[in-house]
Amino acid sequence: MPITANDTNRKSWLEVPSNSDFPIQNIPFGVFLTKENIVTVGTRIGDYAIDLGALQQLNYFEGIELTDDMFMQDTLNDFISDGKKTWRLVRNRIADIFDVNNPKLQNNQTDRDIVIFDIKDVEMQLPVLIGDYTDFYSSKEHATNVGKMFRDPDNALLPNWLHIPVGYHGRSSSIVPSGIPVHRPMGQTLPNGETSPVFGSSRSVDFELETAFITTDVNIMGENIPVTETEDYIFGMVLLNDWSARDIQKWEYVPLGPFLAKNFASSISPWIVTMDALEPFRTKGPKQEPTPLPYLQQKGKHSFDINLEVAIQPENAEATVVSRSNFKYLYWSMCQQLAHHTSNGCRVNSGDMMGSGTISGPTPDSFGSMLELTWGGKNPLKMSDGTERKFINDNDTVIMKGFCQNGQVRIGFGEVSSKLLPPFVRQ
Image (cartoon, rainbow, N blue to C red):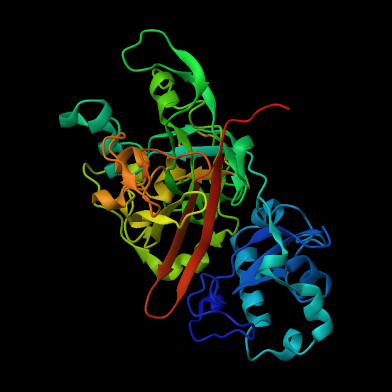
């Protein structure tokens, strides 16, 4: 089935700013709360949020097999469970409805008043009920930088890193959408030169520049999915700020890896950009040496040219861009990550989320964390207001953006923006 929604000649009758992340060729999916406190599944074109539940009730999806309440829910899980054919049919239909040459909704003011909202008048929600969350560690540059800092600079990568997409299971309970503030975590740390730990607030809160992909129902327990088929089970992508407390992490991570330093908060952008929308931006990932084992071997273009940016905004000051990176730098692809994840028969379900791991590029200005950008705090970054940062300060806002662009179209994710608050105090 062709992806007609991607036609670059298509124009919308809704006004779309020239630099918008959300032209009619994007059509992401999300969940929002209206001014009337109604939660609905929606999409976005330009600066308009579109109520897909209302569109369905008004029979604009006639001819597409959907359950009666598919878009009148507070998550996208059921829609994602319906699979790739349904996603493509719905996205193509939405593009047709809002095409400048289609008068049906364009000329029906009554329906338009029910369906279309100004983006400023809605409150974005977590788009899926995330049952399980796995975070990978798939940037060779990031893993090398961390290895140089904390282990042997001459043997920065651990022996398994070039053979498997390393990952760990995180906590879905602390994943929040953009705009929700995050509290500085408390925890155990081992101060420099001491032999006994102390308990207190983390002094080294960091961002991690990541993306994440959302899956549909992939397999039954015990079944592994071939790497050549995994793309069929990936619905779309979001931006991910996977907050980290580096001082807590340093003390706790041996022998079992990340725990409380990583599960206090993870922030995601609210619009899921489909893999169909990203199709024009396919590119090859890095050359993999040694050649992976057969179950992880891929040919062709399985990465995406997604420009990524991180800015830090101190309170009452302008934001300062601290990193510019790109998704294409990731060594292990999403397909390889998902194939490896199911290789032991682990079940993966609709709404599960897989983090990419920190995405660092080859140059210092493309590193994906403060840990790397300041090299463990040795080289502080200067902000627009003249202050310096080794890590994130209380009341700083971390803003991540991502977009693809070629000569014909720009497809973006919007942003994930989160403010770091002081530790939570019980009243």
